[in-house]
Structure formats: structure tokens, C-alpha cells
Image (tube, rainbow, N blue to C red; front, top):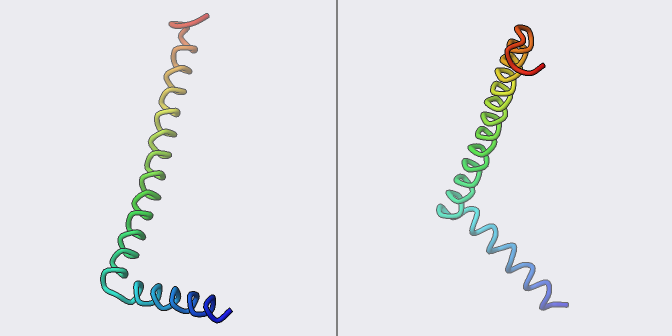
Length: 71
């Protein structure tokens, strides 16, 4: 039981040291930046996809009105 407490204490100390260390702090910062960049990228992809679907819908409606394509 003492050994388990010692291992858990050692892990806590290493995590705290890693976060307080400049290298570990910058890793956390970079991870947050990458996550934010992925979030923004997915939002942009969603907006672009909806714009493409909207223009395709408009072109299909235009051709349906004038009877150029289809039946």
C-alpha cells in the first residue's frame, strides 16, 4: 500500500513539474492552438459546404424552371 501511494505521489509530482516547466507549458499551449485551428477549420469547411449546396440548389431550380435539363 505504501508503494502504491509513493507511485501516485511520484506521478503527481512529475505532472506538476511538466506543466510548470517551460517546455511542458509550451506543449500545452501548442496543443490548445492546434485544437483551436482544427475547430476553425471544421467551421470553415461546414460554411463552404453549405454555400456549395446552396448554389447547386439554385442552379437546379433555375434549370427546372426553364426545363433545360431533366423532364
